[in-house]
Length: 69
Image (cartoon, rainbow, N blue to C red; front, side, top):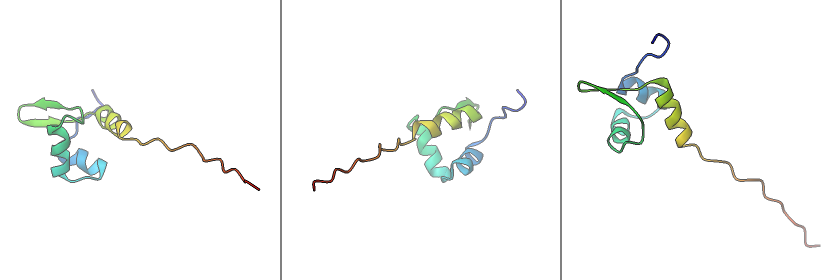
């Protein structure tokens, strides 16, 4: 499993640029996948990547302006 090290709540929050409190809200609402070992929540990189992809907002297509001259 080398190269796929599980990260803690603190480490994952730091990667995502959010607080630990916000991270725990994501866990409680099951918005991010995790592994629970004992009382610890752990995250694989693919869990983090999947979460980032799930919150992605698609850019709107460019607007075509029509001149009414």
